[in-house]
Length: 136
Length: 441
Picture 1: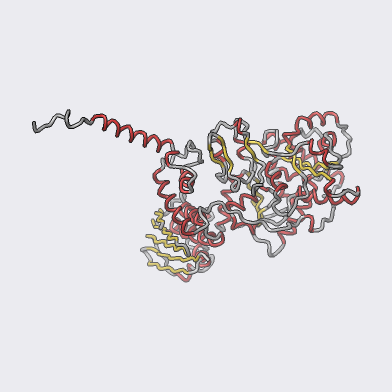
Picture 2: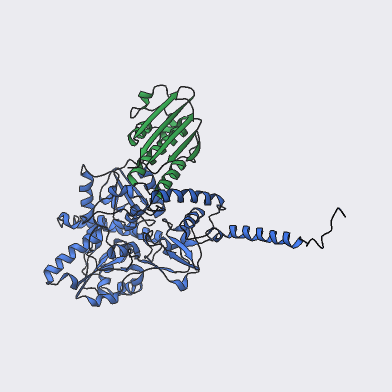
């Protein structure tokens, strides 16, 4: 089980947690196409916290047959989850979009890459996402 | 015979066991053992970075030599486009090419002609609806190997086209066999190479079962003789060059402009390539075409070139400007070979060669990952390399694999020595009860 503490707005370390998770999966010998889905999901989850929230924790639980990712943040939450799940919908500020982030693909990407996906959010409090990806 | 052939080798007498090469190797393939650099063959991608870094010239590339020509009835030189960059733009292209005839070849065939054919095939490929985007050029063999070992998930993104030299070799070999009535094994086809990875590619082809190239001779190896030859070759010597479009492949970005790839990205230098492919694997790079080259500046920066890479680049730009003007004056269209697709197509698929896995057994691998993380926390994190592994993380991995021990770390060793010394001092102060003064007396 690996926990990574994330800080909103901290672009210097953005992507570090997910690349560590990816490296470990490679060392374990998980299939490369599965690793790719896990890496994309964890990266999008990590970036969501950095772009939208104040702070959060990304947790990866790696088992022989599956990887579970959970990310819980303290942040503005998502008012309309159905809308947020639509490709291209984004609430990211302009300066974030200028950096090439906030294209509105984060949540749809996570859902597309995972075998099980759930999201809970309370506006004004934060968001919690659980992802499960099977290794075969 | 080992499973992998590698061109990059060590001359043990020259190796001091310093850490320069292990720290720069993009796949962490080198360890210092017994005071000498040792290459892990499965990890090596023949990029030649260690050749470049070694101050003692202990790392070399095994290539063929001009002596090998005598084993063949007819010898063809295939000069890499980067060869032009090793000479001033005042030396005409035909003189550079014909200098090779002077060295004993029967014929010179400009690899840049192969580059033109591959450029056309790339244009075709990028138009195909089933082409996986971003399509990554497979022209640089070190990059292809980097994908095999570090990014197996991107193998399908590699463009399944042969490199220009292979295409040129197929073309000239089949033509000359037919015209001269020679058997294929009687013709020697030699690549004049700026890089060791190409040498490896012929001995262990990436896309074809058997390469049409007989061998490779490093540019640096024959540079002295070439310089002499260039001085005596007549200016009107008859050797045909390719157009600027093909020759431009020598520079980073040349392939992209030759293929007129619109939404494209050009990356050079192997560590940069690795960083960008990391992002490609995350799906972040939305381009159609990626030209990735292991050497800084492109092939002109190859480890087996002689000229400084920036000087070479400048010369190449000057030469290309001249060539373009000449091409235009002549109305020279790129060579029209009307290549059939068999010239450029791969004969087999590229297999992944992942190197990261700690154990075949997933349970054992997971245990090793845990042990590795624990070990890593105990190490100083200075990444000094004195233990012979490139950094603390690599040492932790070597320890769990049983290839190193914790006291290989000089800081851990010093800690142990200090602890032992303190224990000895403590023991030395101890007296037998017969001599010890008792307070209750």
